[in-house]
Image (tube, rainbow, N blue to C red; front, side, top):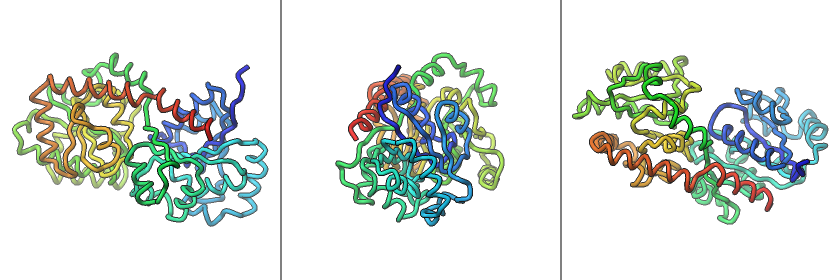
Length: 385
């Protein structure tokens, strides 16, 4: 029998299939295999990962009577909440709390107080997102009550130090990661021609791809601007642009389609809804553009690198500029899409350079950003604390 090393309560704001939650899922499976006893507490049961969590672990969900996460803090101290933790969580004899993302801030420090154990907080957000997902007070409570903080990139670490006064010794920088083996398999076995035909992507064009949830922070409007200015470029008939992860329903989608029509770029862009074949689509691109205004350490960037795609992005936007170096891609001043277009032209005109950059990008992941390396660092931190 495997010895149970430590009982850990992992707190997640929901079970959505997004970067931080997917990374947590991979960590949990590895920790379970290594002999840790894992419990999961969800602040909201929303999301398709819920059943996957339940298939492997004991999952607790806060009573729905507590309302929206950003309003929860005022309910702490209620009888229902105290009974929930006293009767369901405390008897588990938890040895450590692991709070995943700043969105757990309304509860993490409260749980620590009740269970009287140490707290690790894994921060996946930069300042704009922190202000979106947490109040100033809740953020302060979480960071101050944490015994150790994991930052998912150097930019996240720097922001915690600069804007929140966190001492360097309290922060461990452990890069986010993806399942390398899966992406390597897809890169070697997926048919680029087949996936392009399935999603009606031109076979005879140089594909500039993007992937992510459609929101202001991701810079979809900047992506559209790049397409517009490409109409006056020498490569205008040779380029096609693809964004994976944009729903065809809802107000934001309607606004995007309005802009696309207004810009007269309908024939140059393919908008693809969220799909389980996102990785295969990334593998079909010729280069990968990260148009985010702010991104702590985008996992799609790592996936594209594993598929040997040269990377393009903006300076000073977080994990993108932390990761992209001259041997794997190009960084442009924020919003300077004329510079981005020049970089695309270089990749299009010099296939040998483009291939070399892609090879270097994969090697950079395998040598410095592997799943095994980051999980090993998380295990070491858990054992030390």
